[in-house]
Image (tube, rainbow, N blue to C red; front, side):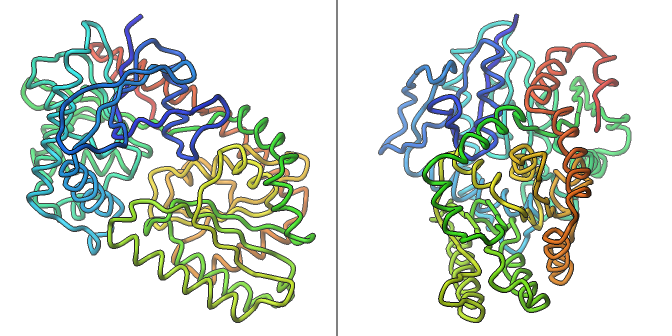
Length: 469
């Protein structure tokens, strides 16, 4: 069997089975590497004064990881400047927050070249190379320049924007050209794939695209839709077991019998947190009988704190939650508990299981695994209700959630009331359908479908057969 080499910006595997970071990517890639021999390559998360290319190899919970440090200029230009200052907001349709700087673009290219030069000596004939996310779009291009001809696949975890948004980036053509150096390009939703193929058609003409395949000269690039899933059984077991742990017990006791509404999101402008906070305040205004009966717990770990836009959203959320608590709080009730910290994955799953309502309301999201984790964590005898943005990739699969427009303040408020008053029979019926969907397309099926599609790159029939659910 071919080795699988997984490449991502940051290598952050679970430290122990069942104690993975909250991020879905780490959980998903660790699961893939347990089924295929190979290793996970990427940045260590550490910076040095000078880039040396020196690698560190270690074994973590049955996964071999190979990491390399970046220097401070790399980190500022590649990671903060271009990847998270330009590509992230642009791909999430926030042109207003997209900060393009040509020097940052040069840093982005430089780090991808350094990754390629460091990785290339480790690659063996027959290896499959699976590259992840917007940080490393040019990696295949750099590896090809070094003579690597192995099958290379790319999976985009975030949305791919429509061409009219993409073209706001001065280097959009280079981004498209780099993606076309892969043999297989995967997306979360059919909408994302359609946007990519539409951009290729606009730049190179309709003759370049036939169905879901791009052909330019000798290059033949297949595309596929591979919505990422979760490990349903592991989450259910973890969530049930976490109910008895001290952190979850303390949280539940602090509710004093009130029902729990929960949100778990990285602090980011794409998550719709400001809109969500306004909608919750509108809910309390519109349904005064719920005052003192519910508590909204919002967990929003800090991330990318050196990017100015994230500092601004943190300040705005603190002000918004303060206004709501100042207006509605009582001596024994705080309407919003807003926490800028992370928790162990098992603890988060316990929090999700204890909640009666989960708010997942991004203004744009590639998938959003919290929505799927909430469903998997629930007690199927007495399940809670998922309120889900129609702009999250998960909405394409989880149609039995209460789907909302994240900009519709009144609509979200009414959805919260509907969730809190929904009869048990309806809650069970909705949850059963959602859970069946998760089981059908779980994390194991996700990575198996992608890797097998990449393995079959030379078969014309394989390209035609790529699923697009």
